[in-house]
Image (cartoon, rainbow, N blue to C red; front, top):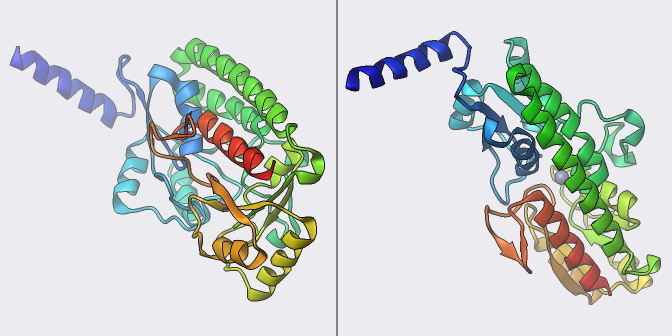
Length: 303
Ligand SMILES: [Zn+2]
């Protein structure tokens, strides 16, 4: 018995060394952010063993891979990341891995240029926060499906079935989000937060979005910008501003105090909640729960 177990273990190791997976083993997939991981898990289903590098509250703009991350990345059969420079400090790592022949893919790689926003203060680069337009995010399912099939062609049917289900689920979520946003009259749809993570959200669901720190969290807010924002909040008669889970709350709290409005709640922007974490009845450890929690928080506070 022990002998056979041993042989089985050995053949697995040999197969792994040769770069082929034994038929019964799940594909090892590593994703950078929890949003990407959520989508990968839904398309991959039981055929993948999915791991994520960045946990709750982690800022992907500033994230540098640790030694144990590098080990996970090197062991993975497929690596997925958001791309559009969201993981700014990991670009070199990905470039090196691609050169070495690893399957490393940005899930946003096939999004049409015309759908991408290029805000002025991001120096010609596209805004990476595409997951807040659920319809645009659903388009990333295609890339995940295609790349998983490339890595495990024998599981094509399962990936196609899972992908179709996920496209339908996201279409439903997009419709829900539009209906929720429509509960607010257009004049009240103004979202003030710490950094510009919500431009796609604004475009998709009809909100004017004002972020204090610009498109990335790398630069800090200047005092002049804070004064401008305070004036804006007063002029528009806004009722609330919002803090983000992965960005320091201090500046937005200061703005709320200076302009005499409340903090409408904590939104998830560049990271999701912990697995199974419930907020107002939504599991914010899932993409769907995060989108619903954010919209609900925004709409209720601005009503
Ligand atoms: Zn961001």
